[in-house]
Image 1 (cartoon, helix red, strand yellow):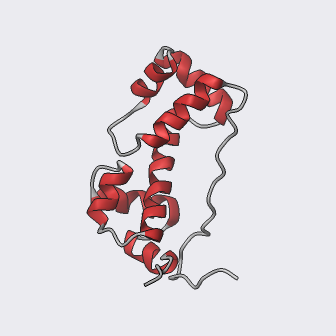
Image 2 (spheres, rainbow, N blue to C red):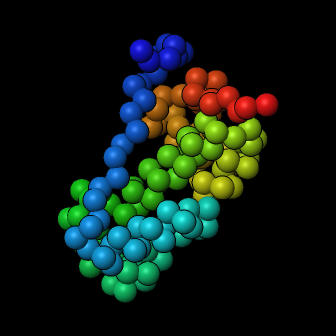
Image 3 (cartoon, one colour):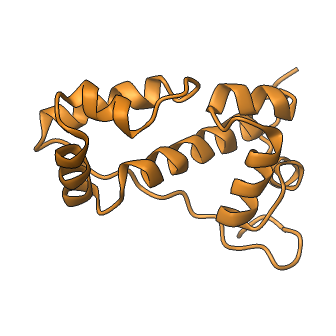
Length: 132
């Protein structure tokens, strides 16, 4: 049974990560990106890490994942922010810093666009209690 949520919210379903087993260049770049989400990395940095031109990287990434690199980065940052809201008591500005979303306003905007909720509403619904 799903937790009770505020009215009008979208269904919470964590998207699965695409398999990168067939492309070692993309797999290592994806792993690197996930480890560096708090930093201001972008498509230029991903392409450089993969040793490809931006255009070639964009095509390869889209073919492999069905998503653009920029959109993928945005989704990964939102997923990280969601996890931080669920498992920590960090204030929103710290969640923003660790997830690389830039500002609290951007986090609110992204959560509203992706899930239809604010960070506080998301935390109230999905907070995992810690053992005292």
